[in-house]
Image (cartoon, rainbow, N blue to C red; front, side):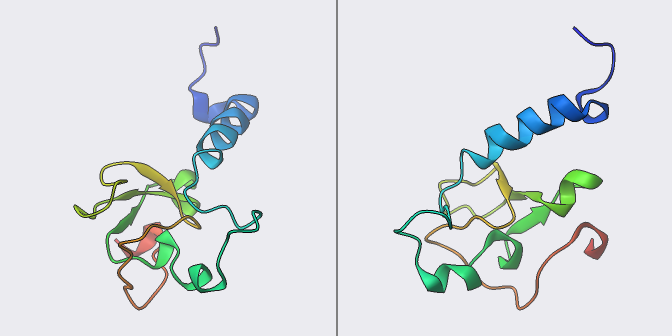
Amino acid sequence: MSDKHAAEDPEEMGAIRDRWIGRRNRDPGKPEYRAEWYGEQCGFCRYWFPMVGKLGLDYGACANGKSEFDGAVRFEHDGCEVFEHSGRWSIPSDF
């Protein structure tokens, strides 16, 4: 076990990223991915709150009470059926 925080360990961060990416609801690499979903990604949703620091460039929390992902950390390029457009892509420095 390392004494370093997981964020300071590139190998650990890679494992975390792989695990989180594997939990995507919508995978653009799969044939069932619909073209309209490109404009309905979490980063555009009015209920998506980017995390702080480096993780916030790719991940944020869903705060949509109608979503099955409410309260969960999500990849910014994922999405769900109750998406609501915010009119812009959210980044950590916006907040």
